[in-house]
Image 1 (cartoon, helix red, strand yellow):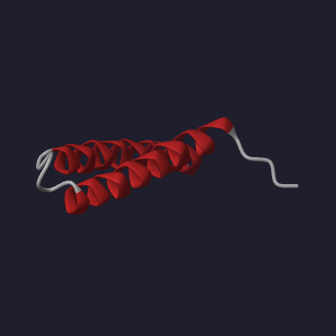
Image 2 (cartoon, helix red, strand yellow):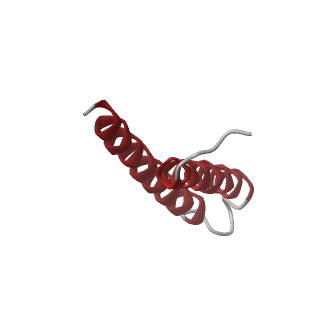
Length: 67
């Protein structure tokens, strides 16, 4: 059984949520283009923001481990 610390789960959660929201945005962008043209773009942008936050948290955690 592998034990993970809470910080590891935190950044992984943000990255995973970001990927899911980006995928939903791409789906909306291709299927609902005629109805809601900007909805997919908004989901892609929000998903990218979550992905960036997750990567930032990962970098901070790695820097703390190295020190």
